[in-house]
Amino acid sequence: MNIEFPNAHRPLPDKATEMLDWKWPDFEPQFRDLASRRLTADTVEKFLTDWTWLHDRVSEVRNRLQVASWRNTADAKLGQRFDQFLRDILPKWHEEEQKLRTKLLESGLQPAGLELPLRRMRTDAALFREENLELEVEEERLHREYEQVSTARTVVWEGKEVPRAALWPVLGGPDRERREAAWRVRATRELEDRTAINSLWQRLLENRLKLAANAGSRSFRDYGWQLLKRFDYTPEDCKRFHRAVEQAAVPAAGRARERRRRMLGLDSLRPWDVHADVLFRPPLKPFADVGELKAGAARLFAHVDEDLGRYFQAMVDEDLLDLESRKNKVTYTCCVPFAAARQAFIMASREWESDNIVGGLAHEFGHACHVFEKSRLPWYQQRETGHEAGELASQSMELLVLSHLAKEQGGFHTEEEARRVATEHLEYVLRFLPRVAAVDALQHWAYENPKDAQDPDRMDEQWLGLMERFEPGVDWTGLEHVLKTGWWRDQSHILVDPLYYIDYGVGMVGACQVWANSMKDKAAAVSAYRQALALGGTKSLPELYRAAGAKFAFDADTLAEVVDLVESKLPGEPG
Image 1 (tube, rainbow, N blue to C red):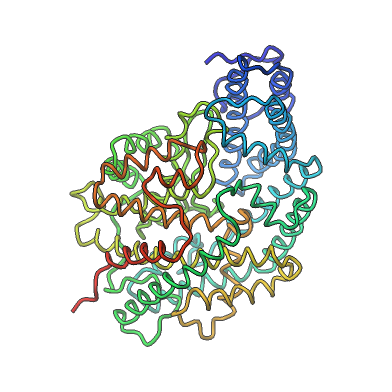
Image 2: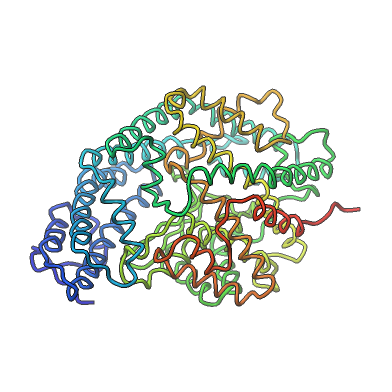
């Protein structure tokens, strides 16, 4: 690729990894060069190509520095490097990007394939306020503070200090007394951070209200809706989804919980019973270490699709996976794009012997597939997609692997074990849809009632009411203080990804439709899935979902069809 920035004062490396120590004066000449160019029908594509080249490298530098800080939050130097980027480069980068957006928009030029990206650019340009640059940096700084609080949250279990994730196998185990003890240890530790997270929430909300006010928005929700480029649905659609979940998914989740209670032989289902195996089997241990996990996952994904398997193998070969659970590593399970390298990095803090392959690794690999497929688009603006498309990618992969979990199909398990894992995941789908509705409803309430939401006690009350509405069937007697004060503070999206979470709901509804298609014609369903991912952000959400063979929907009828499908694949109780 011929990239020329005549005014740059130093040679430009092709790899972002060679730019990690750059300061703003190293990046600035390239932005000024782009801003000085004359735009015509003949020059606009070269302008977009060079802008993409520069944007991809600045973006990858940011993401690599953030990943490094996530992998060890106790390393002060790594944190300082990322903080320096946020403080010294991020606001100037955003300011220069605004100048380039304005330049392109004022030119009136509209290259083919840039119709929807131009609409997103117009939205960004309309929202931009110079006075918000420092507030955006403050938002990022508060996110970092939340990460430091959450990653320091280890527990002492059986005489050893371990990450909270280390208790998941116990929570899924057959010994009820140990499950309760592990659950109480986790809950006690989470409550210890209540005051710190209260303060963070209050400061985040205050900062968000300022961002919205500066941009002339009536509320942060209005501002956030535009920031997230939600052109295809409204807040009222979200509330319609909440009602649809209440009508279709909550009763189904209740039936699954009741089935669990009966099979466990309990009078009531307590919080430490919701993940236990109903046949009292110990947690599965399908591999000895993370090395075996990587090798087995490569085989598993190759059975879904050979090209997708090659993507994962490349990630293994290029050390783009950090899957171990350890102290001082953020608790996020996430996929981060490295745009210039056309790569994706997956990080997870899991105890993999508890068999979170489907909900953890397959989910993030679906995001990675999205990165790989859309990376062929020439301009970065075409690759920017809403979370709703990303969660369709990730959650479809969760479901597509379900038919390949047995060793004969490329997976880790015996046929019986594979059925067990598939059943657990489908029950999770039924539980997850109500949780999505609750988390999304809490955020709508908070941004509709910001004065009330500034009081963490009012947030607690609201959350308790949402749990009663969306997650009945679990006996919290004597533990109401944990229910209302613990979990919403531990849900990182509420703190660091405002208004995110409905994306999981509509994504899951779409993913179940992709899965249904795969049971009729797997090759066609996977091909449509990949074609949809490759469209990136060049099409609307309804068009993207349609390309994948699904409907972008919030209504009760579609949700009922999805719930019926999932329930139909669950086994009955043993006779």
